[in-house]
Amino acid sequence: MKSFLEQTIREAGEIASDYFTKGVNIAATKLDPDDVVSEADKALSKFFTEKIYREYPEHGIQDEEQEDVINPEAEYRWVIDPLDGSRNFAAGVPFWCHLVALRRGGETVMGGVYNPISDSYFFAEKGKGAYLNGSKIKVSKQLGIDYAFGVCARAHRRSHADLYAKVLAHFATTTKARLGNYSTMLGSCYIATGGIDFYVINGGVDHDYFAPVLLCQEAGAKVTDSDGNPWQAGRSDLVMANPALHAKIMAEISSIRDKC
Image 1 (tube, rainbow, N blue to C red):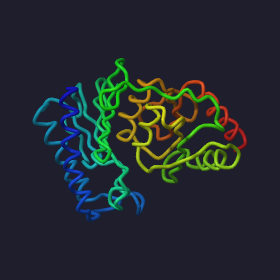
Image 2 (cartoon, rainbow, N blue to C red):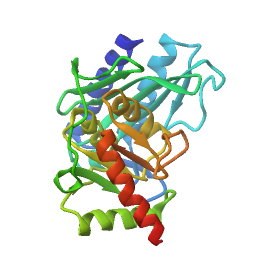
Image 3 (cartoon, rainbow, N blue to C red):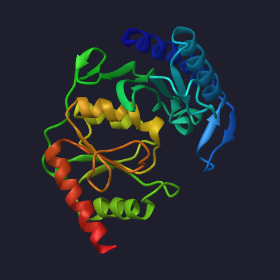
Image 4 (cartoon, helix red, strand yellow):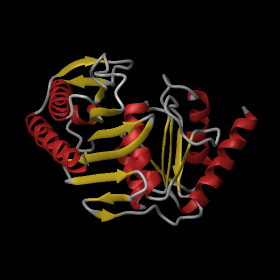
């Protein structure tokens, strides 16, 4: 399944790159006007679903763009975001990716994230480490918030929106941390490489999180919700960093919550 995942996600990258070069039409919007679905999203959804079903007809398939889960009671389930960062993609911004997670018994056992523009393939398997294009990767050793590069994002439509608005304002005004927001979970993969030090967001759902969470955990990150509990499916709030920095980030979030 490991080689199948890489082959499939790279083939998807070829399809997406062709659309990206030519430009796409917006097919629909979701909860927000900037949460778009392009013709590329639909084509990639069809590609992933059909390819996985042909290879593993007994497996479950859960795709962001599909309303129903295929084989919902199956032991294995593929959870796919065929094009994460659709707004970037449609606008010609080259920061987007494909997200694929393989779940078994409610646990993510394998995950792949691919950015065709930079030919960056992130892969993790439960208990076997995290890799970028075949080379093992690890989280940063950054200990101080003021010297950290973090991603903070707040989605008003998701849970904990008020808290995350305050968290974003807090880090922007009371620390010296450099902050970014990439509008795709591709940015979270750089927690696993050590390029980004912390990641604090509330804007995703399960298909956004499964593969990156496994990747970052396997690279040594601590991954929790904003209450400090291990992140679980169904939570949109997410905090990731190396364990020492994570404790400091959580202390800041706790102090903000106490003032609310």
